[in-house]
Amino acid sequence: MAGRYDAIVIGAGPAGEVAISRIAAGGMRVALLERELVGGECAYWACIPSKTLLRPPEVRAEAARAAGLDRPAEHWPALAAYRDFMIRNLDDSKQVEDYRGEGIDVYKGEGRITGPGSVQVGEETLSSERIIIATGSDPAIPPIDGLAEAGFWTNRQATTLSELPKSIVVLGGGPVGVELGQFFARFEVPVTLIHAEERLIPREEPAVGELLAAALEEEGVDLRLDAHAESVTRGPAGYRVGLSDGSEASASELLVATGRRARVGDLGLDSVGIAPGRNGIEVDERCRAADGIWAIGDVTGVMPFTHVGMYQGRIASADIAGEPARASYDAIPRVVFCDPEIAAVGLTSAQAREQGIALATSRIKLPEVLARPWTYEQDPRGELGLLADREREVLVGAWAVAPLAGEWIHQAALAIKTQIPLAVLRDTVAQFPTFSEAYLKGLEALEPAI
Ligand SMILES: Cc1cc2nc3c(=O)[nH]c(=O)nc-3n(C[C@H](O)[C@H](O)[C@H](O)COP(=O)(O)OP(=O)(O)OC[C@H]3O[C@@H](n4cnc5c(N)ncnc54)[C@H](O)[C@@H]3O)c2cc1C
Figure (cartoon, protein in one colour):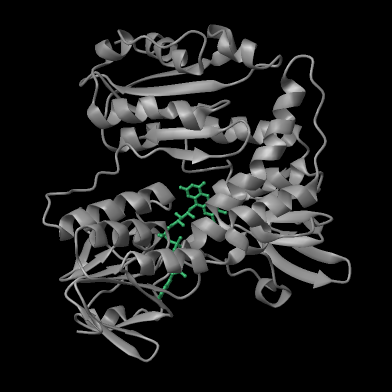
């Protein structure tokens, strides 16, 4: 019967795409609703364009650090053209066609829940006993005097730009502000980065923010930490941002990167008795939000990462298939793709203390203990921090600020997820000379020793 489905997914970002593909593969009749582009924020305005834009300036900086090399020249138009290819020129027609070819009904329009089991999209009313909400998040815009009137960029304008700005003020020193700020700085755009807290990337260990601040300042970023933007005006000369300490910052563009907010407005949640919490739609460990309703991805506010949304897509589809799936977020890697890369997993020391865990910790400088930083570049750098539970003798957290850290953090993720005993980790051999050898050094440096 037209309009009646085994499952309906609202939102075709990475979370919704994983869920729909898995549910359809299980033989169910499914509908996918998308009001903008199939692929979501990640594919067009977030992960994919930002990582594409960051890589060439990273290679250029790496070349300058490698012995006997000059900096390669950069060509912005060629990079912008490659970015456009990577974001499919903001065209999802092939994705829509592919899904339809797989027997998935795609509705391009805004979905709204109108009651238990019922979803409206355009003129159509669809029904299903299983509704999966995967509507993602929007930028959270702070209530700063004059900001709305002045206008500003969000990640959308910054990741799809065709001309580099003359200068830019970035509001926010979280992952998005840091990555995009470094990208602009590396294309010789003067950058002022304003951050309300004392340290950048405040969700991580204080050492991470300190190391990052030093690296960004060395590259010429004008960092204003512990500073609140209080007013914004825009005139012919560009933006002026008034700060809480009485100083000002000015630039031709202003980028707001002050966090994300779950997309729950206009979804009709009240019609099914869901009242979203402060961070989004609250879900249980099976990603259930209410009877017959699942929520996955940024809209849940659990952890705003594509890999978390995709994981929740796997959990929800497994739950729908009747499998005993339960989500656990203890060992989710958290990477900031700046240079040097930041990677972390598990608990920070503040979180471990809150949980009453007796910690042994270490913090090592990689060039002092390893060969790899020296074979990698002539001005070697990098640090690793480990946190271990002294009673259970397992790792509970790790962080690194170092080249390729986003790749080698996964050993720590596996160790934390599976609670590998420290003795086994110490008996595990890493290839010489690699950054992965840092783990043994970090384990040997734990204090108090275990
Ligand atoms: C600049 C930037 C860089 C990032 N880089 C990374 C990174 O490197 N790695 C990483 O893991 N994460 C990164 N993130 C976070 C990542 O983009 C998000 O976690 C991810 O996109 C969330 O996926 P999602 O499917 O939950 O939502 P989204 O990707 O936001 O997709 C939700 C979809 O739902 C649609 N939708 C919304 N409401 C409706 C409705 N009512 N009806 C129909 N459709 C609707 C939207 O149009 C959208 O297409 C980055 C974020 C930003 C802003």
